[in-house]
Image (cartoon, rainbow, N blue to C red; front, side, top):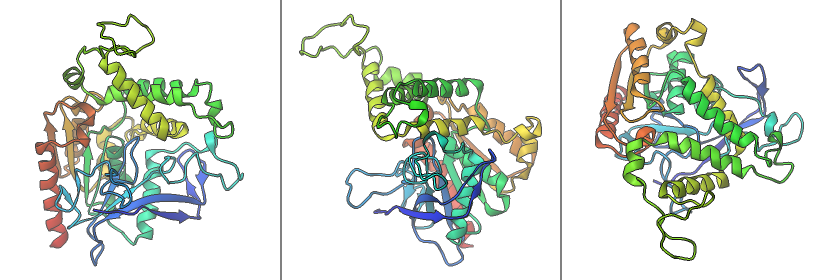
Amino acid sequence: MNVTPQSMHFADRLPLQSGASLRDYSLKYETYGTLNADHSNAVLICHALNASHHVAGVYEDQAKSEGWWDNMIGPGKPLDTDQFFVIGVNNLGSCFGSTGPMHVNPDTGRIYGADFPVVTVEDWVNAQARLLDALGIETLAAVMGGSLGGMQALSWTLQYPNRVRHAVVVASAPNLTAENIAFNEVARRAITTDPDFHEGHFYAHGTVPKRGLRIARMIGHITYLSDDVMNEKFGRQLIAATKDGTQRDYFYSTLEAEFQIESYLRYQGDKFAEYFDANTYLLITRALDYFDPARTYGGDLSHALARATCKFLLVSFTTDWRFAPKRSREIVKALLDNRRDVSYAEIDAPHGHDAFLLDDARYTGVVRSYFDSVAQEVSA
């Protein structure tokens, strides 16, 4: 499935929860499949921290360019683009095409940098709604996302309850625990204390805080994997050879990577630092921290979710300790308290938080079955 990214410009100001606003901004997006005559088969995909609008398919001029959820979305796949019109949108503040810190602030004529306003999950949903308006889509057959994307899907059901018929929330939570916020803060401090950060205006200095980005990614990557996966994949295996090729059990160095897990994390950090924007990382992790729909209801999630009217599918994974199954069950309980139509699957998978991106027959089977039923509604 070949795809082409598109961009839509919005001149009007978008009010943000912080009290600030954005004008003359653009959203990068992709679509897959065909919108039917009554525009009733649209499915919106919301992305997580380091993903983008490129959800599925490949670019014609790039051989290895599969979208980040290509195993889930496409012709004949669990979310079948022969039946649905699927939309992937890059969020504001990201570094993959939508307006973000790397772009010029129309009010000053200078690159935003650290001056890009703080954005929230709710702000992203409002921006997505404007895009759907421009595409002529009044009601979504479904909104779907994993992790931070799942938070956006949940927020859609609260901000625009009359525009969503189904919500698929995967490996997500109603808010972050203190431990999760702590991980995000350590990662942010790694970036902001990098000498090349320059208080977020590193573009003007011709630098990139790569050291901080590397560490932030290493911290994050540890939390995405389960202990079982790390032990199975790396265990205590040593790299075993020095740079000159000689075999040694230990290098007895505090600087060199000696264990394979160390080498793997350094590789992931190096790769991430080459393509991700530091200010974007700060913005998106802060949006994660802020999300808490129950906050204005005294912490009562059942009260908060009373606004939702659509049907739900929630999926969690047993070894996901960052967004543990009990967090999904909190959402399920709150919805059941409101007598909403809820399906829930807890998948016994070994892959940790990353399981929502990987192939698992039980997981993809659940999603396929659910969207088959949605397709029947659409065609009825």
